Amino acid sequence: MTLTELRYIVALSRERHFGRAAEKCHVSQPTLSVALKKVESRFGITLFERTSAEVHLTPIGEKIALQAERVIQEAERLKDIAGEGKDPLIGPLRVGAIYTIAPYLLPRLIPALHVRAAQMPLFINENFTASLTEQLHGGELDVIIISLPFKEAGIVVRPVYDEPFCVALPNGHPLGTYKTISSAQVAAENLLLLGKGNCFRDQVIEACPKLSEPGGIEGSFEGSSLETVRHMVASGAGISVVPISAAKSWPQSLHLLQIRRFSTPQPMRRVALAWRVTFPRPQVIDVLHAAIEDALPSGALKIAR
Image (cartoon, rainbow, N blue to C red; front, side, top):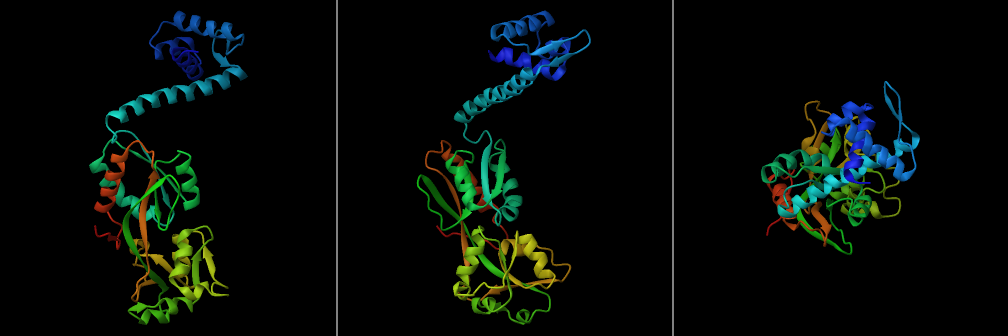
């Protein structure tokens, strides 16, 4: 089938009327009708049931119309790709970000990126590092924002910023009397962690070595997200270690939470961009990196060059 024939099928499947479908396709009604009859005759199938009042798709017609829409969309995508070849900053960018970064970076990044690349909309996927890595390898994502360490064959990594950790305490907690808190003090408390599979959980355990000892995290409660952890801390369920960008984004008006910094050496994570070595738009990476530097999450530290 030609793209023109596919467009006729899609138009008639939507309009359910030959006259309106022909008008949508900018052709005469006889032209559209004859073209569709030829398609049906060529394949020996009936796509549409025709009555004097309306047109109905047959079961096979439903399937073909659905696939025709997909083919037309992909054909249009070819035009977009060709345009991207002329200007790499034109066309969508498929970005993945881990759960503990996306909510605190993206609201600042989007406006900054729009200034630098107004014709490059982002399609965003929040997920765990393992899932984002798989999608990156499979070509479903163009670039991902993750925390280090991260090493994958065929993937390029570029650090962007460092982010200190801090301690979230319920109001009135004894540790709130300290200006800074040590990792040993954290490990001795009833600690709230993110669930397994989240890399930030592993980084917290690494930052507090006693948690790695036998029974170190025994009895710890888990939250599905940093926002869930925030509510648990505010309710008095325990304390938690969180990225400073999350802590600074939380409302302080209810006075149910207090945030304290770690004492030196202050644990932190390094956030980076990762993309396939074969990614055909390297200029996009430079622009994305610069936009993130323009709009660092609150409390994050730019990496010295």
